[in-house]
Image (cartoon, rainbow, N blue to C red; front, top):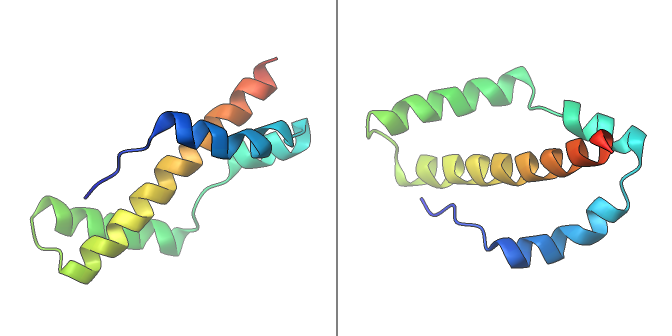
Length: 85
C-alpha cells in the first residue's frame, strides 16, 4: 500500500478549501467521522491485513479507506488550526 502524500502538491490543492472554511464549517469538519457500518468494515479489513489475509480487491479497498482517512485527517487538522485562532 502506497500512502505517501506529496505535501507541497497537497497543500496547493487544499488551499482553496481551507481558505473557504468558516467557523461553522470547520466545527462540522472536525466532528466528521465514518458511520458504524464503515467503521466495522475498515476494522475487519484491518484485522485481515494484520494477518496477511487480504485479497487483492480487499487490499485495494482498504488502501482507499486509509488514503481517505489520511486526507480527512489533514483537513481536520487545518480546521482545528482555524478554530484555534
